[in-house]
Amino acid sequence: MIEKGWAAAACRGDEDAFYQLISIHKRKLFGIAYSYLRNEADALEVVQETVCRAWSKCTQLKDPDSFMPWLIRILINCSIDEQKRRRRITPEVSMDTTTGTAEMISVVRMDLEMALEQMKPKYRHVLMLKYYQDMTLTDIAKVLDRPEGTIKTWLHQGLKQIRKQMDWGGERYYG
Image 1: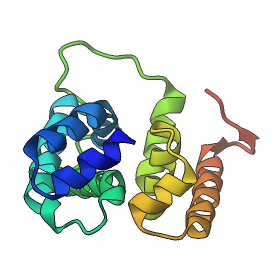
Image 2: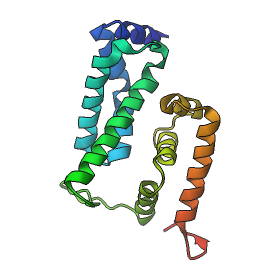
Image 3: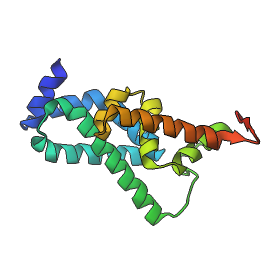
């Protein structure tokens, strides 16, 4: 596969190979960042920070085959850092006021996002990567550097928590 060759070259300091890898995966990286931050400008900033950090540390990566899981892990850490920075600067501002047009978001989607925010990060990471980014459990295990069995358990527990929080009045609440 050509990506493995580019990853190996990027780890040796080849700027063009690194650029090719980032270009191929830029939509995926943006999607992951956006799913964490729910703000286009912040997601773009986090992707940029991720690329800078990855380029500066790329030569230290021992296994070029794990380039993408490594890059996604950096992206997740940058996204979490941005969330923490946001909380310090603007405590509890839940509405996105950066866009000029008001978006109508369904009640169920808002409830789902609130439920995701309230759960433990390990469950939230697995659910977001699985359902927002359509990653396989094997890929998620590589990204989070955990055994696949652990990822399956976290997925099950996360879904159980989501179902519990989405129940309303004893019946399943669909909006």
